[in-house]
Image (cartoon, rainbow, N blue to C red):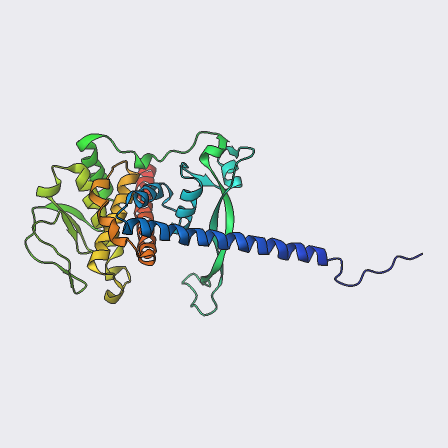
Length: 324
């Protein structure tokens, strides 16, 4: 007796249903992660409006360890694994000689979904540019949930102690800056940048016009840790706030926001090198209070700037090691 033929497509129906169900579940998790980011930003903004900056500063110190991640993922890692020093996917941990412990809880972050952009011109290499169309969630694991080979160290972020160590660090990092860095006595002339007054005057601790960074000898030389903060502040300005970086003057934020972003980036970079600049920053950042969207915009710009600075520093150290 012959077996009845299965109607075409019927055998694949359960598989299709499972696929659709899994995709729906994944989309729900992704939506929940995006909502968590928005909720966290609203919370931080509300705390700032109440005059409380400690929580935001704690996040910014944390973000110094994860400068290669987007702001969204920094927030997601912070809320799920605040004690982590590193995170990586299961296979990446294996590749580094470590394995994820049994029962470890995954940290969920966002990965971009991109497609080729048919409307964009091809690159000089002939490649079609990609455009972002959404996100999907991926799972990573914190370092404390792994075991095996020793964890990597970030030697380029090791700071020798004391004033001499900080002076040496400024000298060392200056060669990674894309513009010249120099010391001079206090300037007394006004500075106009991109058609706007920049506020260069004798009380300035440092300044930049996007073509150079100048540190005020009288105000910085005797306080090397403070000088390092000023150095990072001006470097952030040079990366963020000049039309030479492809921005139009009208696209630049107000002077108050520019100073806020530069100080925020300096705070994160100081934290990466073990220097606490809370006293100089705590009250300043409350200006973001009650403005969650503005806070998000600036934190994204700060995160990208910190990432660029750290990439430049790492590239300098790598080139130096190769030459030795």
